[in-house]
Length: 228
Image (tube, rainbow, N blue to C red; front, side, top):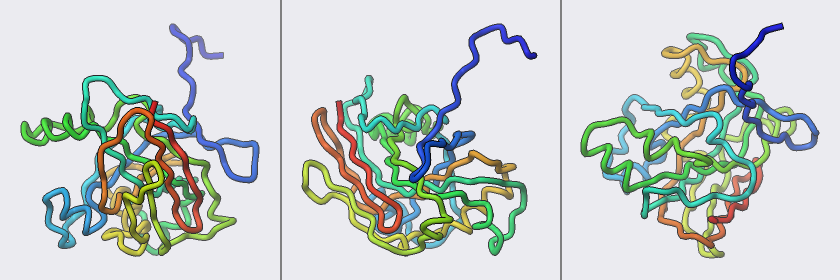
């Protein structure tokens, strides 16, 4: 038996629809600017250039239904995304085999300290201070691909206090799920428990304490999160 010098950290998990079992989180990859309209609203060029990724921490994933407004920021934005959960991985995965590695999908939010991210961009520094903070990835339960298939189109929508903020369609993603998996596997050895947050449509905006965010992705599920 291995003896640890400190208490063993718990493994972050997400619930799985239709079962009492949970999905363990290994790594969190996030693609940037994967919807053309969002790329434009963030000042980028929507032409199909090589994708870029950043990471959140596994314990940033949170299924509690609450988002604590973070310290050291006064401009925190919602970004609705579809999470892709992998059941296996590898390196140099061909695009036509990529979906074989997907366990399921979930509705999630990439909450962003936009003011701190903006400062990092200006200084050409990494984005983690704006992206990888505590409970910055509220997430719903994972719907297994065995039950819902591999959704490639369908309404993506987020409201705040009942008012529509983000609306799009999965088919508007510049880089599709198989392409993201294949591309990442060229640079990293993907594994079971890895998740990919697949980008957000336009309409990102600031939230305040007390706001209620309700998100849905056709065929995948729904998510309700209160800012506390």
